[in-house]
Image (cartoon, rainbow, N blue to C red; front, side, top):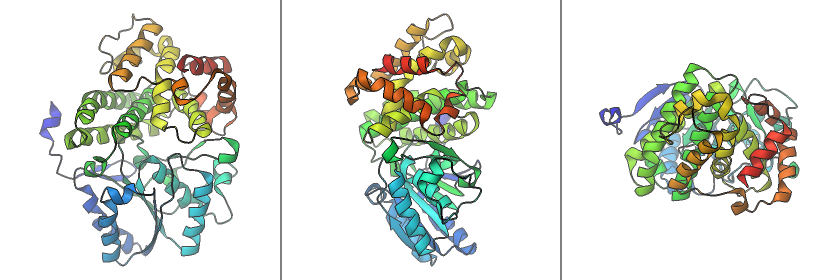
Length: 398
């Protein structure tokens, strides 16, 4: 158990394209980060957050003090909802422009971080809107610097170049990926994640599993993504049950946060395909659907679809959650093994449980092919991502 040799209270500096301060108490590093910002003449920042978690976790008290200590003026936009929308991004971008913000600080999970990334771009492109950005009417090369204070262990958005948002009026939920939105700094502090509810804990951790399953099986997968996938899934398999047994187990939170972080690096390299391309229409249509829950529902059918094409890789990386898996299993048997694991961590849900009906399948299938960017994800799938294939995955997940 190599994990026992790690002091979870010692802050590690991890270099990806982002410098990540990782460990219990890492939030205190915001003081050093604020000093760096001030040295770069960044004296105004827009803080982007949800409505309450940034305060309830205790993060804001430390961040506000650091900003004041270093003479950095700030405004806070705290209206980001789960599955951030074009409306809120446009609203926050106007505030950033009017205020003259020189950097963005995101406090929250993937939604505030993704929203901040979007605002960081729009603050540089004064005439553009979130609709322009997410309908690919321009390709940004610049953005304001971003600091990501991560409050969940799932999205990996604090370490990569991806962001998503919903265009409400069109039921679109596209994804963007630009080098200019890698955060400059990120903080992963398990102390800030201990207040995640049981459901949030499950869903964000399953999000990390989906990231690496896709990144290890895409058309651009590499040995690096397969290595990261095995480690990510192994850590989630081991520590998610521990976190669910005791939501205040900081060691479990630490390793789930680490799993999510390397999962973010994994799909930054191997990209995504089926489960994310098919989940985005789900939460675009039902805005209150947790992204991680939608992914969990789709995962068994996606693995069944690509089993024959990628059984060597899948049997390797899924071993921690499906010990009985081997290349001689049928696709249906593997579906059942993955579904049994999901049930074991309290996620037996199907699409019908979340209000979807047979009549919704065609609309969801069409959205998977008409939403900007999702066709690009589908093109990376290891099997032919035809409409029939997508329709069948939705149907089997119903």
